[in-house]
Image (cartoon, rainbow, N blue to C red; front, side):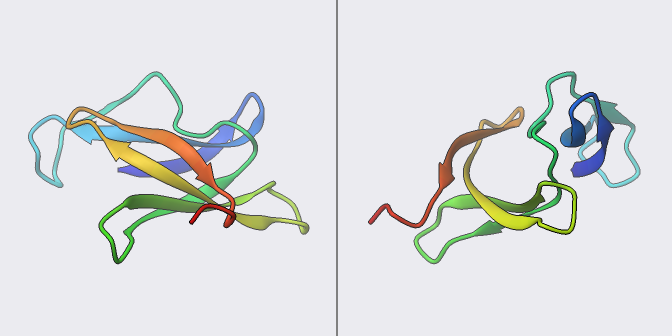
Length: 89
């Protein structure tokens, strides 16, 4: 599960993993943040060609813009591969 809260650098996205693999948990918070640059409310989606992506808003103020990231699911955690800027084809 990805979630958003306030951190040392503003809004931050973290990851919690269900140790049972079930919604009821128990849940363990991972120490490393997924995104710590004052952005949050991330959502995961898969592109039509099968890439895992995350979109969130940043910064956490009225000038917020969507930011999109290619993600990797390692089987143990999620990690950001690179930010999608719209210039790659």
